[in-house]
Each structure stands twice: as structure tokens, then as C-alpha cells.
Length: 249
Image (tube, rainbow, N blue to C red; front, side, top):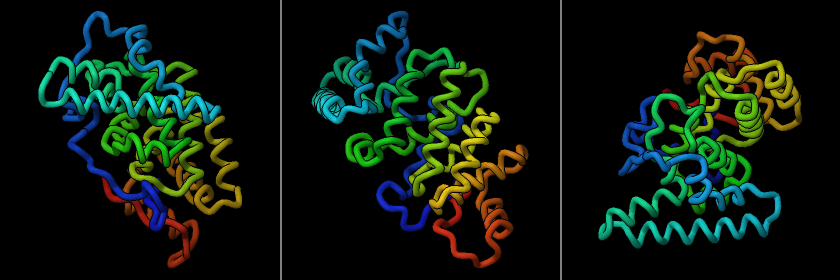
């Protein structure tokens, strides 16, 4: 994926944060997953968060109000009550996603909330940036979700994310979605990417075209050099395009 020059809000590169390939590399200040940390427990703590991607603006507003409230609780507990601080984090985004889930993200009870966090950023980037901007978490989740073994429902949501992201101006860490595209590659994904690549939108044409090209080359790295090579082949040397190359991984 590309890194957009003049892409507007959210286009800057955020901190990489030492994430490595997973979420265990310093994302959060705590990690907890006990016997009660199942899907029901997550729902009780974070069920309100699904309102962040609701179609009804009133539902989104209510969820945003709740997020502001719980973030206030996190700030209030920080530094004086470690137990209350940890508990407050478990009910807030993105802090609740800063926990260990073992080696299989597909069975992690927090998976729906990881998808929600990324879907919120994709659908409502201004709200996400104002209330929950965390580029390192975005990058880590995308990398960890770019894995085999997901069920059809999750693969469909990841496909939707890729298609949504390629049709907008570049935002920080969007290039990581190339990993997801490779993980969920399918005739349906390629069909939708071809539609985007043939649209009138220059971002969609460029991003979707590049993803399609790199899907045909599974051994090719998603690097700045590869991006420039593709641009030169697709548009010709010196061609004016609405993007600049991604930073090297």
C-alpha cells in the first residue's frame, strides 16, 4: 500500500513501537487473560463499543460518549490504584486490545473488538483519530490478523476492510493491509479490487491496482523499491500520481 503525500488528516506515519510480528512486544503496560476472560466477559466490558460503527448517528454518539467516559476512568486510576487502572483499561479501546491471546488469534475472545477497532478507523477516520488514535495498535492488529485459519465471517470482514482502505487517501499504516490481502486472497477480493482499480477515483485506481499486482507475486516484498517499480511500469517514469512511495518496513 502507498503512503500519500497530502493525504490529509491521519496520513502521517505513527510510531512503530517495537511491535515486531505480534502484540506481545510492548503494546501495553499489562497483560491479563484469566478463566473469566471469555466472550461473555468481553461483551460485558465492551459491548457498547459496537455502537462506534453503527449506521445511526445517535448510536455512534452514545458509544463515543461512553468511550470518553471510560477513558476518563483510565486516566483517573492511573498512577494511584494499579488494580483499578488495569480494570479500567480492560473496558476501554484500544487498551483492552493490549493483552496476550496466545498463538491463535482466531480463537481469541478479543477478536471481534480487534476487527471493530479497525473497522471504526476505516469507516469513521475522523472520529477514530480524535478519540482513539493509536497507530502502533493499528499496525500490530493488522499484522496479527493477516493470518490463515480465520472462519468465513472473519475473512469476509477482512476482505471488506481491504476494499474500503484501497479506496481512500492513504492513512498511516494502511500499507500493512497488503498482508491482509495476501492472507484472505480470493476470487471475490480480486473482483472487488478490479472494480476499484477501474473506477474514476485516482486513489482507488492506484491502490487497488497495486494490491492486485502484488497478489500475483506472492514472493515480492511490499517495499518502497517494489512500489516505485510498479509505478514506473504502470504509469511510466515521471508520471504524475496522487501518492508517494511507502516507507520501507
